[in-house]
Length: 200
Image (cartoon, rainbow, N blue to C red):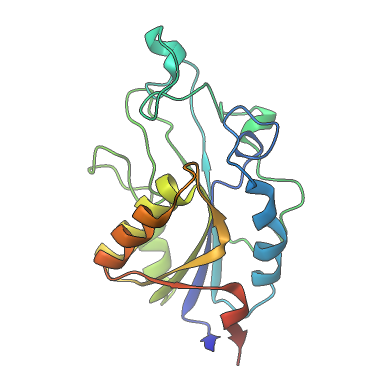
């Protein structure tokens, strides 16, 4: 059993309408994580934070911007700032979320990680916010495991946080997430199930 304390933070990554069934870039079975994450929000985390893709029109990550079909590097238009697709899932319990990071706002740079843009130069402020609140361990949930969850977890570990990905609170774009779990393990990132977590 893993005991959650006030030095722990719950990170909810990109649980947005466009990544849920019916959305522009739906993650298979993505809505299945919502009740799991809602259960986790009831645990005594010191802080809870969420991230949102928050893209301008004609963002560099959009296939339409380049006049080509969608690929793993150029996605369908999604999570355009201010649209319904960019909103957090309505059924996500948000009462204890103390910070929302909006990432991918630069039209010329994508941002998978909730900690920094893909240019590896621009930070979102999440790191300093968590450290300023004496957080030393993060539990990462959300969408999608093989992209934004993975990059967030790797950055969290590199920035000095003990990092745990909650397996049943994530879903992947790809059909076989084992390669992602292997990459995370190589970075010293642990995995757990929601049932493994409890309050003191």
